[in-house]
Length: 186
Image (cartoon, rainbow, N blue to C red; front, side):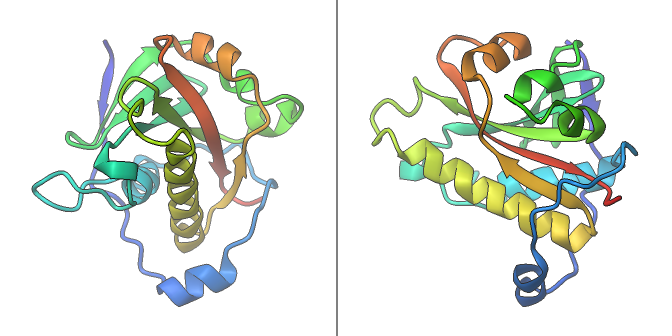
């Protein structure tokens, strides 16, 4: 398995008030790759560990931590391991086109889509909507981090869940549920 060790995340220095006031959906981005420090900051914001007991930057239904962040790029699909601050490749295929039902040009141009994947086995004792709430908070954390970093981003949910799961080479109990596509503003 190919692994990428990410650097320390880029510092998020914008105040929360400013990030909330400036946050906007923006699908107009370049195809310029994100630097690893910016990617690490986005991933830390949505799934980073903030304490020795494993607590995260975002809340988790019943503290199950049943939603995991994955990254889609031209070089494949990658699972974010927050304990190691690393990416583990699940496939070397570019599966970004599977992450949309109709915005093909946008998702191929944007260098990164973060996929929030629910583990249905881990979450089976929680209310079914819990993983969607978790993914929503993760998406909002990405929006705020992207705003602080001066990036353009968009939360998306129009895609074939089964096709994306299969393309990412995920187990049957793993379900992609929400996406955050991000890049440098055009």
